[in-house]
Length: 227
Image (cartoon, rainbow, N blue to C red; front, side, top):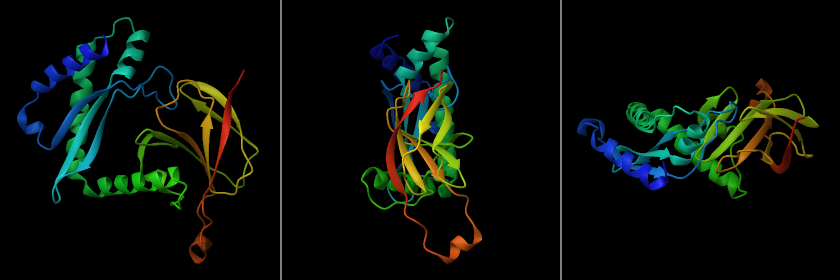
């Protein structure tokens, strides 16, 4: 199913949703992006509920379905049912909207994490633990907008790190950075639309409360596919 046909399908499905479940939904959109699961092979993020701030304390959301992810999964599964998968994804994301509206604290934390991530992208000062307030995708894996963070707690900076991305094993030679370090990776097969960032940090200690924390350092490294 091509992009335009899928877009028309989603529009038809949206019209079948009762009005009371659409309260606060600012838009239902279709994106061409392909969003691979950071750890598991043959798994993709099919849709997303993105919280927005309405007037006053009103919480609104934008629901997005990713055509690229649907197409990738359809290429793997011969019995892929586009309509059923689209309906399941759409209603799943609408449930997330209701959860956002019910949990203002979680929404506030996510907004803060997105602001900190923007500061990281701009080379400004940011909180070294902000990624932990993003969406938890898997153990030690967090997502904020299009960026994925692979969180590792270490005693000291390792010379290299083994990791799994979308079912494949990689090795990364860690650049000479002080901890906490945010290392943006390239060389990954099936990358997300944004960055994949390896975060290396020490576990928090009691005496850390008595001193000013070290600012995060940033660098880049290439992930090499393991043989």
